[in-house]
Image 1 (tube, rainbow, N blue to C red):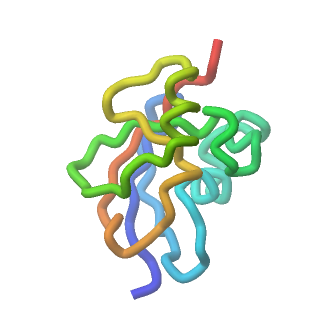
Image 2 (cartoon, rainbow, N blue to C red):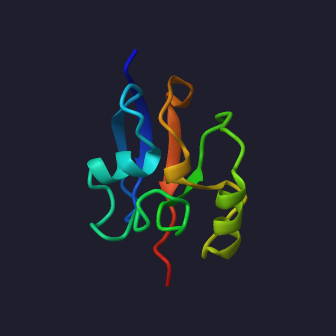
Length: 110
């Protein structure tokens, strides 16, 4: 299997079911960018280095996710609109384990 289905709710509240490749070493932020689900320049500003929180999203489904790295924890500690289910999309690599994942993009920082 090389593609999985992910349901992404954009910042306008519109739900999109997208195909995400598991064989291209992509992360969730890159999938959002490739489908243009957030305006250019509003997501992945740091390029996926866990140095900004522009790709913060809320995990809505009950998937087992990898533990947060220290960098991800530190960035979320400083981010706006953080919830218990917040993760940085750039830190969630697309694997078969994420098939059926449901996420909502966090609002842009004020």
